[in-house]
Length: 190
Image 1 (cartoon, rainbow, N blue to C red):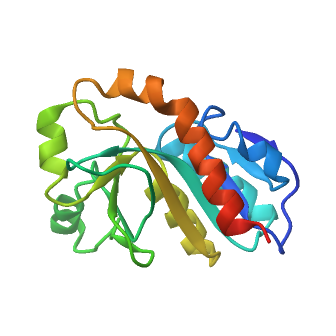
Image 2 (cartoon, rainbow, N blue to C red):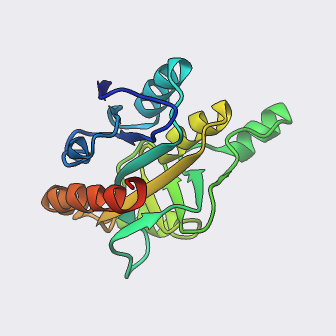
Image 3 (tube, rainbow, N blue to C red):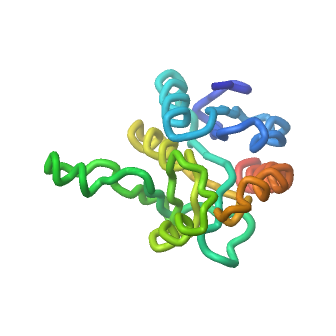
């Protein structure tokens, strides 16, 4: 976990998993939280920070795999789900629902899980329920919503979630970081 800048109630908090994703965000004079990859790092870092400092909103910016052909560019997420949490099995055991989808507004569905999607079969399976996949969005949104802080998830398509995903992600991270900063500049600064 790394915090850059100061959180204040009149400004948004930008949350990224990796320094590479937030490389250009430091130039915007907004607070940036770098959580580390995966749901546990994202949830822990976000919760620790929000326990003491409440921003005007939380904006999770990062990369995502396109689960369907033809998706490119930057997307504001409308709904977040967990692709690696078996809510039906937990319901059958406990009679209670956990890990429900998070409604965030209009936009594509994001499937979050602690697995980097780099497999065509998994991609096809996830595409039945979502358009994009990442490793942190659901966790950040769940923490922010539980505390009552507005939240937006903004994802740049870095790869296709197939066997070439790792290479595609590496090749596109510099552009992704620039596009995410462009979005933040246009949408969050006066």
